[in-house]
Amino acid sequence: MDIYGILGFPVGHSLSPLLHNKAFKNLGINAEYDYFEISPDRLKYFFSNEVINLPIKGLSVTIPHKISCMEFLDEISESAQKIGAVNTIKNENNKLIGENFDWIGVRDSVLEEIDFKNKRVGICGAGGAARAATFAASHAACSELIIFVRDPQKHQKFATDFNCKVLNFPDLNSKAKSIEIDILINATPVGMYPEINLSPFNLDLLAGKPIIFDMVYKPLQTKMLQEAKAKGFKTITGEKMLLNQAYKQFEFWTGMPSPKEIMKKELLKNLQ
Ligand code: NAP
Figure 1 (tube, rainbow, N blue to C red):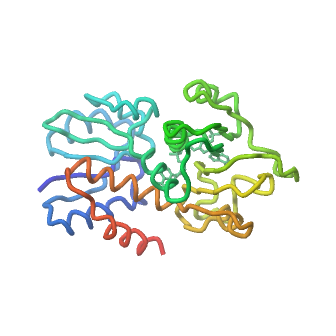
Figure 2 (cartoon, rainbow, N blue to C red):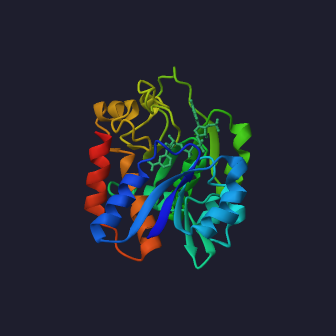
């Protein structure tokens, strides 16, 4: 039996095992996707022993290992290098290959509503997910990129890495509808369960009718998305990104098309 899994600390909350195990079962693949909850001090041992000896054929990688795992890999894709993080590992005859499909998750979810090309893009947050969204937007030739953060000084490297503006979150009490962007993406945890009454951005400040994408998927209809809907803005929910990157992971590991509808149904059943 082939072994796959999610590497993180903690990982108990992850929905990836449900998705991938359902897909393996549906296609009759003799494989199992497990939880690998590995503390940072055990990461080196994990890569030099467990990954090789079990052996583990593929891993999804989550917080806090997306960057720290990179030093244990033999090859890292160009996009993962540019993003500066790996969210997927494939073990090909003991050669560990790192990829980042979070940006594909963003790209394919956004494409359902809008093409980034020539669009003005705003992103809340400057962590790993924000870097993946920034890569997706710049890869598709967006016209402008603004990153909203709590402390721009702390994120100057982000501005240089991606040639974008890094600004403070706008004043929440301001009333001016002055920010002109076509799509706003939340890549912070603000609004995630249990703090479901919070939104990272005052949508009153946006001019026009931008599309609002929230990466948070617990709950699916976050406060930010509820406010966007009330204003008549189009919205994109966070589970789409999770699914789109999972489809790519599955195909990268197995070389087979992922059973998308089965995986989507399984996720939505567990998010209701
Ligand atoms: P991360 O690397 O920890 O980055 C989090 C970012 O959010 C940081 O820039 C942080 O700001 C900012 N932030 C945190 N709390 C904030 C607050 N109260 N107000 C304003 N900004 C705040 O995390 P990540 O991996 O990028 O993930 C970010 C979010 O995206 C998480 O909620 C995660 O669940 C979600 N996500 C979803 C998917 C999906 O498939 N849907 C995939 C990946 C991530 P500072 O720099 O100031 O600390």
